[in-house]
Image (cartoon, rainbow, N blue to C red):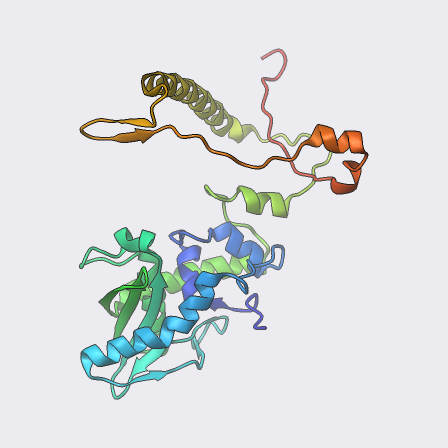
Length: 294
């Protein structure tokens, strides 16, 4: 298996700049520093079918444009920063153009439907591939939902590429110095993996007062909205009554019985088998209270 901790690939650059919907800068840093294991994608069907369908999408591109695609799996490496590299899905024979193949589910259609735009993380990946392979044009050929073919063209932009390289250099210095980037939304799991246990000391960090106060304000708003949500749902359910649901000019609402299997813990305890099917789970819980005397 390829050791992805020793280099930064083109598909990871969008995480470096904070625009990857699947990976944060902190999680990528934790993976590159060996503190967190990358997600195991071996049994993910979407990944498997993406690989299987790559040749199908490539064939569609060739048929549409009357060209020949060559699978190019050799690695291109930055002339100065040897840890920055990429691979290409395909190159168009006899040209300086590359073709990146994507397969996405039907739910991703909204991000691809605009004829003049591409998801930002895809643009970043292809721009890095173009710069590292010294090509001028990149095509993105995408099969959406297994039945909608979309393709878009990206022209190399030197300034954009240079800016990406600069940000990658800054990130890699943080990897080498073991200096973590700032945590952002979605980093709770990574933080727990990095700091699974706590000691008995309370660290004095005075500049966190604003963030903690904002957290408490948001928590209060969530609680108030949850109460309002419950009140509105009670009114809707009361109107539905014994019916399956209701319909308005704008909405259709159903309130149906749902059956699910649950484990009878009390019965397991009476039978003396409960302890044999339980295990200890440890996590860290965030609790906030006002300091006494404040």
